[in-house]
Image (tube, rainbow, N blue to C red; front, side):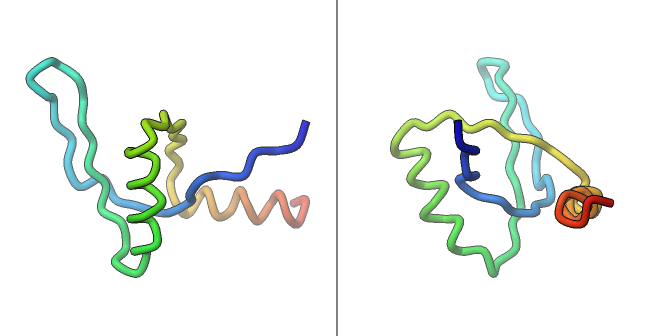
Length: 73
């Protein structure tokens, strides 16, 4: 089995956390303005009703982790 490539990878700040009328959570992310490429990518997942799997890391720790995978340290 081959590894699946991510649909998107980006850093973001949590802009808003709210509870909807039906009790479900809604989280709004603030993404850098230079990542407009994500608009189409994420809009396509919404259009196609794709359920996403989301992992949340501290952005700096994630970069260290990715670097350790490459260097083996």
